[in-house]
Image (cartoon, rainbow, N blue to C red; front, side, top):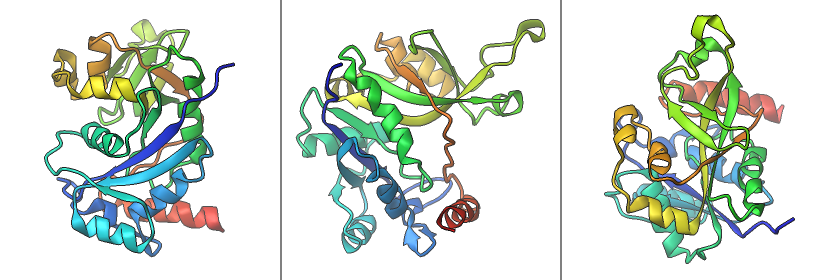
Length: 248
C-alpha cells in the first residue's frame, strides 16, 4: 500500500454572493459560519494544514480574531477553484501533494467525509476525487441537485442536473447525488484553471465537466454521510438546529 501524500485543506470564503451576501460571516450559535467549517475540517486527521482563503478584509479580521489561519486572495476569481489554487500557490504546496477544496458553506460538515475524499490518493493513478451518496427519485428530479453516474472502478462518466441514468420503462431507479467536495493533486489543479470553460460545462453550468471533457478522470467515492449546505439565510435555522442536536 502506497503512502498517502501530504494533504492541505483550503476553505474558499468569498464575501459577495448573489443569494446571501456576507455568507461566511453569518452567525451560527454565536460564531461565524467559516469558524464552524474550520473546526469540522481540523478534526480530519489526514489534513496536515487548513487555511481560510478570502477576498474580504472583514472576513480576514474575523478569522484572525478567532485564530483561524487565513490568506488574502484576489477578488476577481471566476470560481472557488481558482481561489483555492491561488491559496495553494501562496502556501507553496508541492506538485505531488493533495489539495482539498472544502466548501465554506458546510458548517455541519462531517470530518469523515474528508477522510473518504483523500483516501484514494494512496493510488498514484488517482488525480481528482469527489463524493456522492444514494438519493431517491424525488431528489433526483430536482435540477439544483447534481447527479453523477460512474463506472465500476469509481471513474465518473457524467454529471448532470437531469436525473441520470434515465430509468427507461421504469427499470431501476438508482440515483447518486453529487456532493461538492473535491480533492486534487496540485499538478492537476494547476492544469485545470488554465483550461477554458468546456462545451458541456457551459450547457449544464457544472464546472467539474471541464475535467471529463479534457480527459482528466474524476474518482467518485460513495459515502453514507449527508451534505447540508447553506445557500440562503433561511438555511441558517436548519443548520443551527442540527448543530445543537449534535452537542446535546
